Length: 301
Image 1 (cartoon, rainbow, N blue to C red):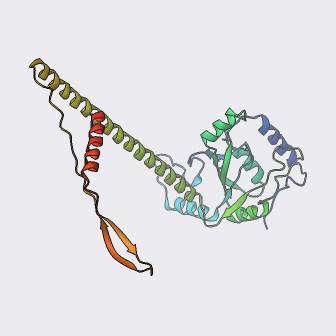
Image 2: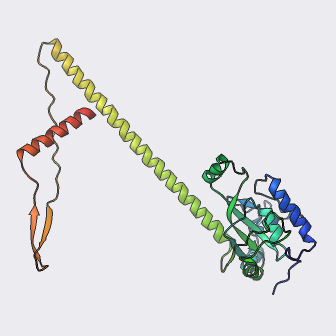
């Protein structure tokens, strides 16, 4: 059982501050980042849409000339082992990290909060259709300093109303929380870094493939222009000398293909002997194929 401060559902004195924040959420066009409000401690640093360890006590940069001792490393590992992460599968419309912290910090000490912004394409569509221009978040992760509190909060608040004043901005929204056992904050940063590297690799591969296709197209165009220029030059020289214009020799390409194998099945369902279907050697079809190939090559070159 965890100790909690007075809840919003009970109509306590904290309702006034909560409702003021809820009313500010309607008019405030914040950017989704907050310094944590009171005290400005490192735990109140937020990072939105990217990995940022500026508020992480475990990896805080030491002054130059001072090395990280083994004691500091052990303390950081101990804090990490004690912490727990809660996954928020849905963030209410236009709720900022500061509001999430304000609502959950009464249940236990909170470390870092990370909310994922919606895609730019989706936001542009909403703005184009006359919707709100403010940033909106789709999911998030909340780190509690004590994993016991994290597990208890997720089990207690999941699928329950936010509560507060009856006409509050988030009164009827539901919490969507899930405790992630054996999941630490470093796992989240590693996952985000891996996804970012994968996106960059795909983008680089796509750009490289597009560049190759463009280079190949340019080479073919230049080659076609060169062949066309050589052909026109030969025709001009032949006309000056009073000779007949030389006929361009058709280019024939023989492409080797495997024989097509057809398996026959008799009435009893037994497989018969294999029959090899060879391409037809009809002279008419062969000449037609050559004429088609010649017309295609003339269009290209």
